[in-house]
Amino acid sequence: MRVYYMTSTKWAEVILKERRLKLARFGELNDPFELSLIDNRPRATRTVVGLVTGHFHNTIGVICFGAKWASPVMWAHYADKHFGIALGFDVSDHLLTKMQYTDAKISVPFGPHLPKHGLSEELLTKIRRTKATDWGYEREYRVEAALRIKDPVTGLYYVDFGPQVQLREVIIGHRCNWTATTVLPLLGAVTKPVRICKARPAFGNFEMVEQRKFRPVTVKPAKA
Image (cartoon, rainbow, N blue to C red; front, side, top):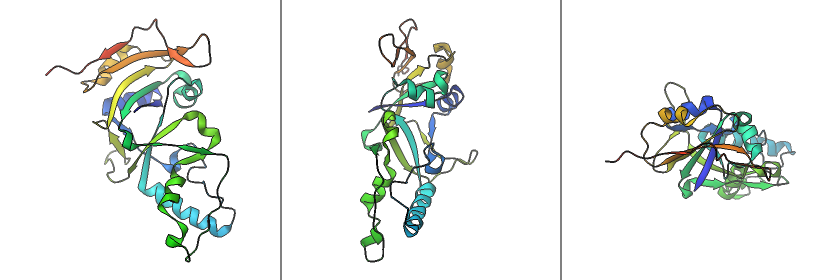
């Protein structure tokens, strides 16, 4: 599936040069309600929720993508107010999780009388993959991965570009001063065609579209 990762030019340059995406921990994400699906007003429930939150923060990382790049709000929030970049990736479907959205937290019983104290695998998965309805505009998909191999230099965790995460598009933001000439040396050799284009506000509705005056460039793999 084609999904989009939005970022500033500073980090887009790093991502393209290093050919990898950083795994974010849940506690680093911009929603303070990550992993907070359960109504934790009861003190005992807060203890359980705290244990679950700490476990996932320390063991699982995520990469957050959007289903489309047309949303001006997404560009504003995640691509440096349209000064940034959207990177389009083909990601293997089995790696992607479609986020769900809800208007209400859920009440869950816990206790030793319940199997696994009430923490079923289904519940734990739902906790990781549900956000408040207000975030629905993101149309978010995520890749989850275990935090196993830490980069010795940065101390962070990454997923490398490869057969299951393939760069296919570079969309330059409406206010960004990058050109195709800026992008080309950052790409290096590619294994799949990568298309470079530029976004602009649409004339007839409230979305971003491709700027036709900007001549798109497709970088193709070198012939064997």
